[in-house]
Amino acid sequence: MTVAAAVEARGLRRQFPLDGGGTVTALDDVDLHIAPGEIVAVVGRSGAGKSTLLNLIGAIDRGYEGELTVFGQELRRLSERELARFRNRQIGFVFQSFNLLPGLTVGDNVMLPASFGADMPDVLVRRRAHHLLDEVGLGDRFNQPPLQLSGGERQRVAIARALLLEPPLLVCDEPTGSLDTATADQILQLFREIREKRGTTLVMVTHDPAVARSADRLVRLERGRIVGTTLEAP
Image (cartoon, rainbow, N blue to C red):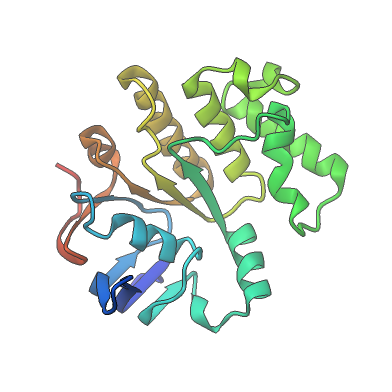
């Protein structure tokens, strides 16, 4: 029986124009099925197409050919407004550089996604932010500026922010790239707990072998093509 997909790509192709004319192909004829609740690590050398694939799955870029559906929604059929709403509600983002706003408190950073059109009362937003910070071990840091936190703590805040609106999909770009080994292990354990508690699907681009080993499946890209998938990372 075919499992309904969190992400389904068929014949996915993405080209970019070159300044001197012509195009460069970042992704070429990619077929990919990601099941709900699966943790997938995307690996490959620089320039292999990893970030392009992540941007497409994350609905940041939709200038593609082929088919791409995320939870049954063909992204290219959405208007810009519909796409922004879909991205805000269905997808959480975790980046290597954390992307926290230094002028806001930790709590305000976590609550930020709710300011982009979420139909949620302010009191509920604040309560949920407190709960998520408790969950990631930072319940006492709500009113602190993020610059007072360590790198691992900032990444935990970024994860709490990504989860605020309970998206079923997290896309993570080198989520442990700025962290030491011990802290990275803690973040990976947190990802596994998130999946177990919420059934969240995670797609992670990484150069880190430890991140790849933590995934359910590894997808390897070379020159814009998938050259291998394994059900369990080596």
